[in-house]
Image 1 (cartoon, rainbow, N blue to C red):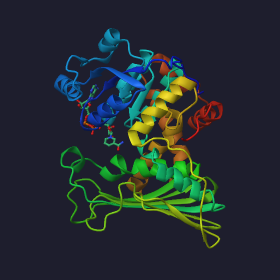
Image 2 (image 1 turned 30 degrees about the horizontal axis):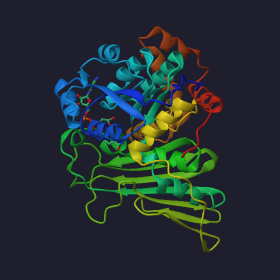
Image 3 (image 1 turned 60 degrees about the horizontal axis):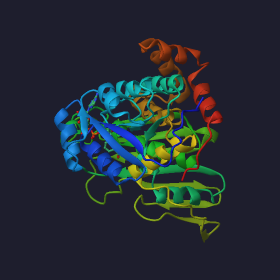
Image 4 (image 1 turned 30 degrees about the vertical axis):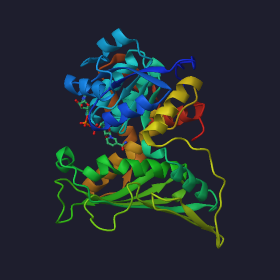
Length: 383
Ligand SMILES: NC(=O)c1ccc[n+]([C@@H]2O[C@H](COP(=O)([O-])OP(=O)(O)OC[C@H]3O[C@@H](n4cnc5c(N)ncnc54)[C@H](O)[C@@H]3O)[C@@H](O)[C@H]2O)c1
């Protein structure tokens, strides 16, 4: 059930500790420093020098830094934790913060696997604390406008994303397996769920590595998802396609019974409805990227209304990634609901914390736990 402790003292900023001060951590530190809603009271990193460099970056070298969250929390009494560590650390760091009685805003993906994400959803229930995943690309006024255009099209049946970039990151990305699906595609998959307001049912996926690719793992993939109601979502992506690249958001097309909407990912979207340009109502801005998710997190803690990205609601975005990888590995269409139930059994088997394991075992099924959370949530508006 998605009810969580609120922090109902709007007169003062929320005191936050950030865990993880690497590449993305630096962007978060700048965003936290620029927000009047939060006050940074400490930085935790396994590499103390990274935490110190983060404090120095903000011009507060005297800020509390540590390698241990529990110790720093004891000394600084924060209201909340930002988990900007690497994906494999999301489960232990977020679980520790929730058990300390602290709500968490964490970078995507929620955890390294769907099973770990279900355990974190159960931990959030056990401790009554919010765990929100920052799916930052949802916070984009053009994406919100595309959804408004899609609302003019009558029944929507076809959605597609074409993503073509050619970045040379160096480092771990060029060595990892399934680099495109694991590191990038979740943004588009999550946006597809947002646009359709529906959930995925099955996926068939092929991934591959073009002969000139500079990545070890597959840098290109095509996935066809069936959503509720028979809607199809096709994702065609590549991280080794130099020339005439798409935007980082990818190029989107939505087709419905009365027309089509297009978005380049960088410009205002447009639509044609019954042969005329579509002109939907515009919505107020929900903020941009991580600043938008930080504002939504604070708003949720102030109001008790469930934000976009609350962990139960986010599980299926990561499940789309895992199911796409399972499909390309088995060369079969994968049933996402069945995969979710398997992940619940794995989560309960692996869970070492008795309270979290009991909570997982109390769920009738993973899908009902996610549906129940959604139906009991006081849902905050998307913007
Ligand atoms: N939203 C986006 O567009 C976007 C872009 C890039 C990265 N990310 C996400 O941000 C997260 C961080 O990525 P990054 O590129 O900053 O990685 P990074 O490797 O540059 O930095 C991670 C930092 O976390 C620290 N760390 C690791 N495990 C820890 C633990 N258990 N406790 C404390 N500190 C720990 C490391 O020492 C390092 O300083 C990842 O989940 C990644 O997927 C999101």
